[in-house]
Every structure is written in C-alpha cells, then in structure tokens.
Amino acid sequence: MINNQTTFGIEIETQIPSRLSLQVGYHGNGLPVTEVLLANGQVVQAPRFGGATWKADEDPSIRTANGFKKCEFVSPILKGDQGVAHILEFLGFLKAIGAKRPIRVGGATQGGIHITIHAGTSVQSASPAKILDWCEKVARLGNRLSPVLFGQSAERRDRSQWCPLHPVRHLDSEIKRAKEYGTLSINIGKYAMINFSKLRSTGCIEFRSFATTLNPHKILVILASVFTICQEATTDNLSNWSSQNRLARAKASEVFGKFWNFGGRRHIFAQFPTMKRFAKSMFNWGYASCAYFDRLRLNELPERTERNAEALDLMNQPSFMSHVRGSV
Image 1 (tube, one colour):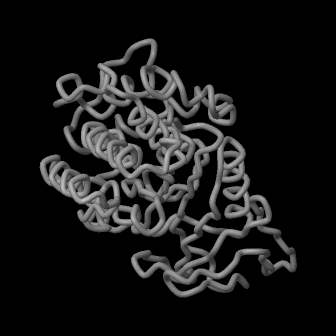
Image 2 (cartoon, rainbow, N blue to C red):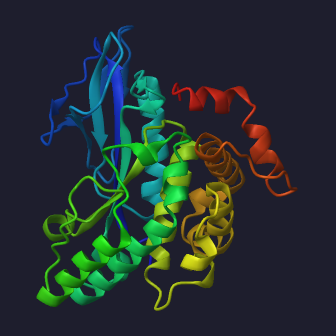
Image 3 (cartoon, one colour):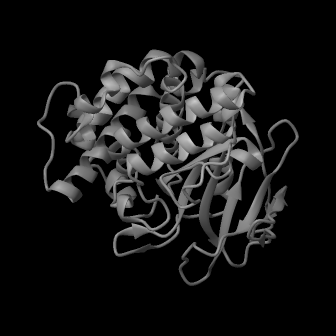
C-alpha cells in the first residue's frame, strides 16, 4: 500500500546559471547542495529532509542555453506526505537560484524528471515473490496508462530515446524469467518508460516518462500518477477501470479522466493531504496536458463538458502556453 511509510525519490534535470556558486559533481557522483551564493550577495539555504541534502549531478544528456550549465538535482530518500511537501519547498529553492528547464530541440525538452519508488515499502514486504508480482502489475498498468504518463509532458515524450515503451510480451517474459529464477533482476534495460534495472541493487523502480517541469502543480500530478499506479498494483486484482479493454484506443485525456476519478482520488488523496489541497489545480493541469498531447498526436481535442471546462480554458492561459513552450 502506498502510504506514509512508502519511500521514494525524485531527480530533476535542469540548467542553472553558469556564474552560480553551486558545485556540481560528475554524473553518478553528485555533490551535496547546502547553500548557494547569488550574484547580489544573497545566500540561499537549500532545504533538507530529515537532515539529508539533495545532490547536484552533471548529467550529460541535458542540453542548455548559453550562459547555463547542466545540473540534475537528486533528492535524498523521501517518505510520505512530508516528502511530497518537501519537494514543493525545494522547487521554491530552485526558483530562487534561477534554475530553468533544459532547452527544447524539435519541440522536445532536453531533460527529464525521474521518480523512484521503493518496492519493499510499497508492498510492505521483503519477499522477492511479492515484489515481483507487484512489478508485473506495475508494468502492465504502466503500459495501459502510457498515454497518461507520456501525456503529462504536453509534448511527444513517447518519441524520446530515454524512455521508450517496451512491448508487453517483452516485459512479461522478463518478469516470468525473474520469477522462475527467484531473482530481482529484470533485464529490459535502463532506458524504458519504467526502469526495473535498479530493483536488484537498490530495491527501487524508476518512472522515466516525464519531461522536466518546475511547475509545482505539474510535479504533484506526476507524483500522483506514479503513486496511483503503484497503489493499484498492490491489489489482488486490477480494478475494472484499468482493464485493457477499457483503456485500449482511448485518448490520453479520456484515460486521465478515468485514472483520476477511479484511481487517484480514491486512495492517494486520503494518504497525501498536500496533494488533496491542490486537487482541483492538479486535475486541470493534468487534463490540459493530456489534451494538448492528444492534439499533437491525433490533431484532436476532447469535447467540452462541465467537468473538463476549466482544464480546457487553462490551455488558452499564458501560464499554460508558457509551459508548453518550455519556459516553466
């Protein structure tokens, strides 16, 4: 069950001003983020979670504008609603030091957000069999809900080389092999929409389908999407709303509506009050992003209803247009 005992993490790929005093470590060997001295002499303290610091890592895949340098911010291990609230606090720090989304090339943001979830704390067991059963359900749900996971970026993230969607039969065969050998090694490669390659070494899986955003409402929707999939996967039988037949050939905005109504609201908001506080804006940003993804992919928009009216109106607002142009 996804609750206050579930541990997770987030990696946010950004570009930061080159003149910034922040020390950035080599990729895979990030340096602690404690404080930053701005050009005006102001010192900005970085938030900590339970005393633990974030790390700054120079990920080579990030693309930057002139006058900026690559920086991936890697969170410490986070937990429960306090962890969610801490991410919002850290986003305030990023804004204060002038961090931005990486540049866009061909309409695609050249940086991403990765969410890691600890499998054992999700299923509340260290049993490899239970963890693999959960991973199998996560993989199937992720495949069915891929329009929502890719759609959150409001761009063609489904075309990215860093997070391709692997065929279900490939995932099934690899997880079946892992079950037969009693190993937590699932070999589908790191570059996948959901990366299982960290499971054996860290006990975690990683969701990689999201382009970088520093918009707090969007990041909350991303977290809620991941948490909902992981929660649904803890049930004995997958819910009817998430069946293959119900989701096949559906538009991203339609899938998001089902996902939000039957999945996210039912459990996640009860466990994470920070998300519940922002529920309305989260729905609007999530639905609008998926609708924009539908327009890019299918050249269609959903019909206007009472439920989605605010979300569709948001698509015409400067804040949303700024987001899809890559500036927020």
